[in-house]
Image (tube, rainbow, N blue to C red; front, top):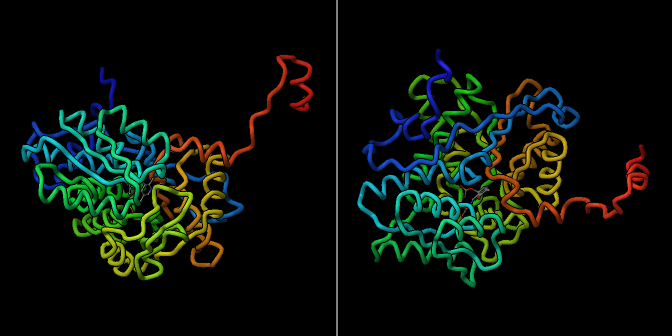
Length: 356
Ligand code: F0G
């Protein structure tokens, strides 16, 4: 009797191998990342009307963010090349993922993060996976500059998305969207920070089109936080500010990739305010049961904005990537929710409060 479909999901390198650069079997380092669900919106019709909205929930990857897609490939390649250590700058998720995959590969991980500016869950991950965590008195952009220099001069492999293998791994999310939907969406919405992910999705969609797997390409819609919106402004932002710490970036490394995705697809890169981000973050958690982190909600906030501006049409299919899990950032969740009620262990009083 056959109990499984076709065996367990083997991780995205094994599953998408024919679409990826070659890699030797014994270098593959996987935590079975990928194969994340595309969750259909059911309760937000009052906002989206007859638009079909789907959430690509990347928070369900092994370390809770989309970074695992790029990291499985970047760390596997580093291993193939004989590297003993990896290094990255991070607003949190990259450091968590790099630390986990390095642990799996038996390598050392060095991670540089802006001091006091990364969400607690992410910090705890990097620490638990045994990375050397360096909290610098500076922002992400400064940290990236430092790790780029170190990796050029010392025997450590850089695993930020300037490493092309990161983009190769991350493009598989676009493959999954196409395979789950059966076609490409009309619009694809993403939060934009260092701009690697929008670059990767666009590469993935274009490759599937070139291989005849889809006939149309989506319009790529990237959203930055208003206080950290260099691509929208057209110049770097020296002191970026936003509650969405994951995308608190003033000088994205893949700036050119984001512009190409926007212009080649006929898409748009815009900004949303912190209030709009938090509103979307609460909306998708409280009405759809999907808990993403604040930065992830920039994609939904962007979609709501585009709907309100009349850009989207009835019958369109839109995908919003929810890049990371809400559990990454318990502080923002608690601070933006109603406080729990403290009450005596007394059934009568409890029932009265419940209004039952
Ligand atoms: N959403 C989340 C949850 C992220 O962690 C990031 C980036 C992004 C969106 C933006 O993606 O950089 O490809 O445009 N986080 C990086 C990090 C910078 O260090 O974890 P991007």
